[in-house]
Image (tube, rainbow, N blue to C red):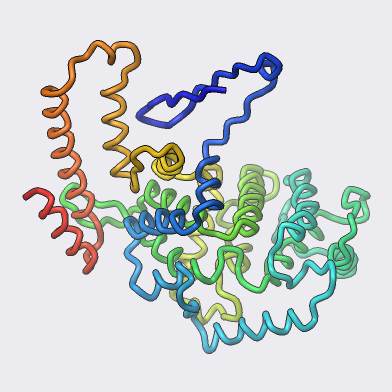
Length: 389
């Protein structure tokens, strides 16, 4: 089987030519994030450094917040003794842990398989008015919870249970996780994403959210989640997205759903609404944004995909979005298929490379100039100026 890169300014694809006649009739499944996942599993240090370096390009994370994101220090959370309280909660779980238990347990793929029964059922009942808002019946909830904890399959389609029972149980499951689905380590990064705003022509910060940068930052941050968290988050946000699409029947908009779920997926554990008073609106709006844009958030940014692909091919690897744009420009001009073979090289190519380098430096300077004021910004500006010399 031969794979040929196909350069494009918008996306990076591959043309696959299969030489095995017995396989030609089979459907070809192309996963654009294949090399990203390969890098994550085979060289996690390189993967983490790549993703974090691009997160810090978008978010101005102080040293402590960055250390939390990297897992180098314990997260400092709002409220008194929040970290210690969460530790003892986890310790108590270990003391009472039973085989097959799902509720209150650290998230696992086995637990997700159990909870998926609830998600699958709710997808069939999205038109239920007040879904996730109206509580279920306490007796039926206990029956469902005991069944899931025992590891047995449940027949939610039997008619014995109401969609509100299942929706309430899903929220209960999330609420009893030892830490929020988005993890304590990522908490401060999510607050920073909510502060990403557009800049005007003069480089001044406006009050309009920079949706493109917010999506990019979430794509990167989600790459750093533990696999079980990321998998369940994708299932959950897709369910909430589909629920919001039926809001004319169920009366549950993306914002209404965010009000229901923000405390379970992003609020730190063991804190009260008073502890989060200044951040509640940010966190709720952040979850609303995730629901509305959920179909875009679980794709690695194009430059991450290209870095991973080139990493395994042994070629030059772009480390950031700016690098990818420069590389794509070079590739597009150097390899316009058959015509490229007729072009002369050397002199004209050197001039072209010099011009592109200068253009890239100007774009890089403008990008750094638009960053929020910080010590990091000043350092980057000095580095870019040195490049001009």
